[in-house]
Length: 268
Image 1 (tube, rainbow, N blue to C red):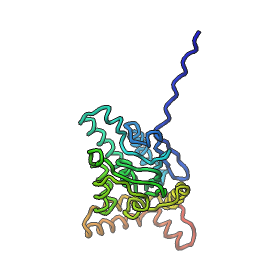
Image 2: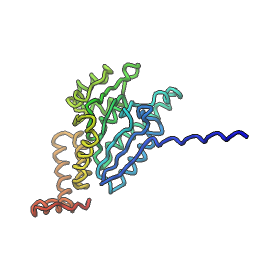
Image 3: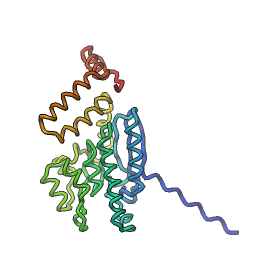
Image 4: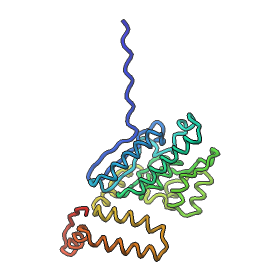
């Protein structure tokens, strides 16, 4: 009697989440495919971000990746398997919604970048509020080399970099190294590869120690005022600051400062 064939191994989850000390780490987990954004990974990211947005215990989010690459963009094999314009429109709408959710999260988001971040992977880095890269990281919006302009990545890239730098990245399709990406404002810091995890943990810890109310108020205010004329921005900022001063955390922070003690944040 022949033995039964072995049961197929379950696919590992395409996204991992770990919560520790108020910091949620989301790890893209398709290392064999350079963490390309498949439909399943986009869905998993959206669900995780929606859950985090409603989780008052989370103060900071780290977006990381397993394997040698951060993210190689959309899964081109998956896309070519179903060449349909309506399907492509739906795919980019889902991706854009996920990117907008990242930006609208009340918590600051830090990208922890190793290896390559290309096309929509570069878009992910540009969309995060902060980014720290290992020294060997490289960035590109290489769709132009395939006859496909990186239009959706261009939205995030052009909003996080000077115009000429963004144009060069988008229209040449050439890689820039981590140092150049830092010069252009795509990432905040570059550290030795072996120090990347510790550097991001330290930055996340610094943010997590702040008032969660101040973090969420500040992130919302920061992005909204960018789209306003200067006079409107100052008027809006004054209103936000006046409301902020009436919050318990602001009173606690000021009282703690005057009393030379550590504040106890309540998130309200």
